[in-house]
Image (tube, rainbow, N blue to C red; front, top):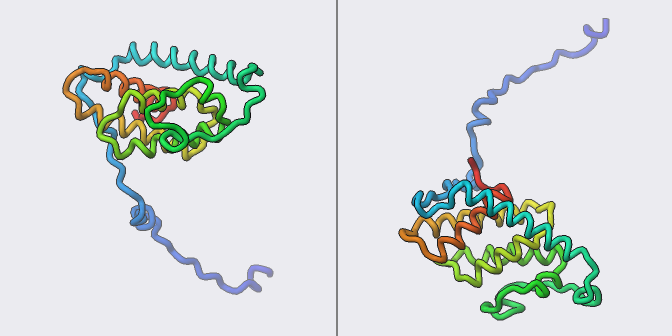
Length: 189
């Protein structure tokens, strides 16, 4: 009886295959991560041992940072941006990094990664800052920081792909690739 009282309903047939094929025009086409020459890439064994070392370094830093040491307990946490608050050639120090709070460390890492995007090479100082900030950044990482780490992986891989012989920069780039790609999981397999 009720079914007879309800007016007839029109059912629209929607072709979902056409909607699935459509991509919005503002989505960028992201190229693959460039590959470098096999003799300049880090070996799997080296990556594994380095990641173990890096993990231990992060744990040691987090333990030190969480302790109430006299050097930091009375200090005011502040935000530091390389090249703005400091001279660009100053190496990062433990005291300098410890004075930053977790948000400032992540923001400084993102800012530094944004800054290196226009560089053709990375100096030792740039690599030291990136290494120190990667050691100090606290988990969990937000999406913006993960995207920046992915950008760092792309930039380091791009520079590494242009290299033809082993030098100090190749070693530093391999370290940063291992950190961003393997440790922070930004390398696509």
